Amino acid sequence: MFSWLKQSAKKFGLFSDDDPPPERSGPRLIPRDQHIISRAHISPNALKVLYRLRQEGYQAYLVGGGVRDLLLGREPKDFDVATNARPEEIRRVFRNCRIIGRRFRLAHVHFGKEIIEVATFRAQHDEESEEDALNENGRILSDNVYGTIEDDAWRRDFTVNALYYDINDFSVVDYTGGVADLDEGRLRIIGDPVQRFREDPVRMLRAVRFAAKLGFRIDEASEQAIHDLGHLLEDISPARLFDETLKMFQAGYAAETFELLRHYGLFGYLFPETDAQLAEERDNFPQVFVARALENTDRRVDEGKSITPSFLVAALLWGPVSREAEQNVARGMSELEAMQVAGDAVVARQVRHVAFPKRFTLQSREIWTLQERLKRRGGKRAELLMQHPRFRAGYDLLMLRAECGEDVAELADWWTRFQSADEDARQSMAVHTGQPAKKRRRPRKRKRKPADQGTA
Ligand code: ATP
Ligand code: MG
Image 1: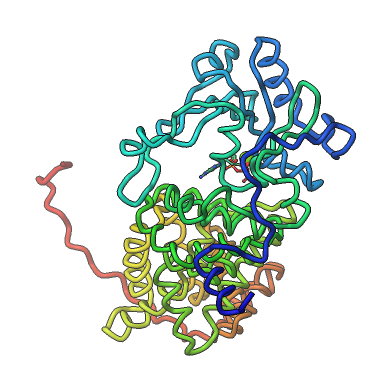
Image 2: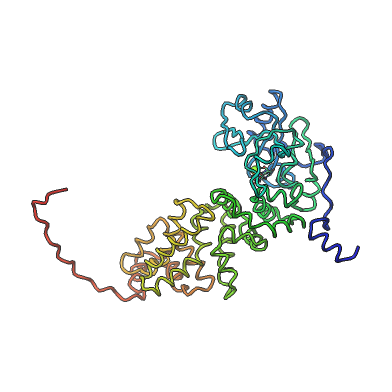
């Protein structure tokens, strides 16, 4: 074929170098002896749910990330179950069950800390109900039309997420070509990419998250659609974007996710001010800084250490906050006040895009002001600062700044030495902070209150 024709055909999604998606036909069944899923790898509670539903006469399958990850030989994060039982019927079967969600009603079956999510098979919206269920951008507002397992497979997001493990005969059921895509390392949205991303723009973020986590490549047609439709994320509630942001940055693949978000032009819809700085290309400090921060986060996840969204916010917004703080100083504020005011302002603007709850942003502000407070180390100050609940995070941010070339290497080094020093060494370090000793002010004489004012 002429190459220009091929190119324009590609541009309009008419064809790609990828294999064509399968037509709607019967499922491909992969019998028990031809895949690697064994019940030993499935959570006993998920198995209980599957068996119990079957016992009550319902169909029951493991589906979604659980099946995908097991087929890849990975440990699933959680287990989702799909069934033809309706939410009320599921509740009748399990006492330890709660129905959640409005847009998408689901049953949560609780076993101590573990929750097994049980969803009723759903169908795509048909033409008639479509008007009520979609908004003017084609976004799904309500998704409670029940259907068969086949309908359920086709309404899912990616082919590799639409595989079912059948508890009856332990086979894997594949309607959409997910097994072939798993083999190829390909992430392919089911159906027409433009339509499916319009229905739910968060699927673009999910594409990036799975591509990063699985090391998969996003297929060409989906890729093109993501490049074109990123702006639809402006329509998504900041609360939902918060949920997705945590999933993207706390799963152990944050650095790769960040690269992909930037590549597809999506990062700016989550962190517009940071993104604007990254685009300036005056120097590559912000780029290196964010990448390093996320690599550290990934390392901590890998080592099983705790991570907190407040540090993530503090690191991702450090660029905008520190710049605004500098401007505040130029306007005559003290350095500490400048940092506080800048932190407040940047957070107030940020949460209009991604709604980080106050309990996290308050801590991020502490981490930022600690960048100033850590400079003042004289007398008993250093010891006291170490008691600060955010000291560790503040120190980590300071170290990161030093590593990335900010002019705080000496200060960071001082704190590293101070923490490992014994008491005597600490005392002498506290004297030699390089700061001029503060003049002691005489306490001002207070006027005595007249006795007759009493205690109010
Ligand atoms: P993980 O749990 O590892 O993050 P997952 O694939 O299980 O990945 P979930 O968010 O738990 O992701 O969703 C479970 C399944 O529900 C998905 O695999 C997919 O089939 C379906 N799903 C979830 N979100 C959407 C969506 N926005 N659009 C269509 N299908 C979805
Ligand atoms: Mg899941």
